[in-house]
Image 1 (cartoon, rainbow, N blue to C red):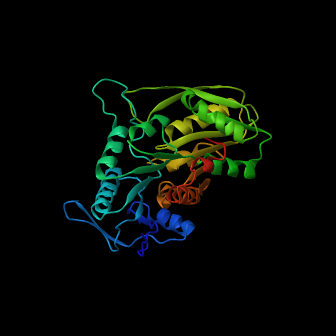
Image 2: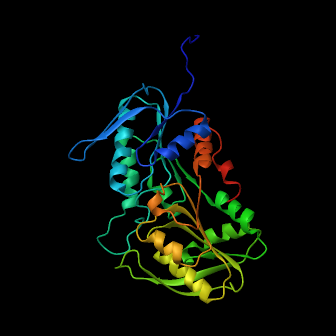
Image 3: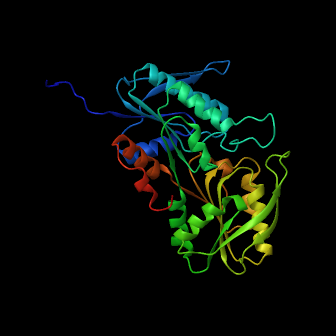
Length: 325
């Protein structure tokens, strides 16, 4: 039997309202357009979304970053997924450059939620077939979603920038705590086997966003230290780590992070903490009010576009890691 209808796959890209600039950059890299839609809030805060083109049979990719107000953008993503499912999209992949509630990935004490799992369940229930995300707070979150999860890493771009700007001869990679030493080891490998150090710190589980940095474990004296973390929220932890490194005799301190949440007063803290440069990606929008003189923002759009292309063409997403995963 010969089919006369066009049975080719159709990639369609959809953007939430949280970070449209990133979606447009991804679309440019892919050579497609962001599908037109109507999206608005009713007076009571309810969200309405309608796509202006047919989505039937499409391979749909929904891009939604989740800055503040995070809950609104999570809800918008769920509504977009539901609209695609009811519009008969063939496959729905949700691109969450910054996975919401990732810090709540386990119970620290009794009667606490595991909110990162709840987000995965909500996405699945709404109709998502796949999740694409960047630098999860912990790898275990991949197992929360009942379906494929493409966990991408920004380390390649960040490390390449560090190599180009600072070389590798006198570099030391510093983890902000003992829990991220494994990530720091990957960084060290990508920087020609740079030595490692980490900050020994204590945290009060009853007080959020507050950490006391204690001392450096490792030799940082006279070295250019690359202080890494997956996200910076209020900046207190990382600013304290810079001070500890400087007190230990470190040379220049470079901060590298994937997710620049930069809640107040992060911009002020980072600008005045003594770091020579703060490098972040644009997984989250970093508006003028969050920017400061020594901040450099790298685009995550090429990585997301490559990932979407590989998923759409049933290619190898693993090949994009370049040995960093």
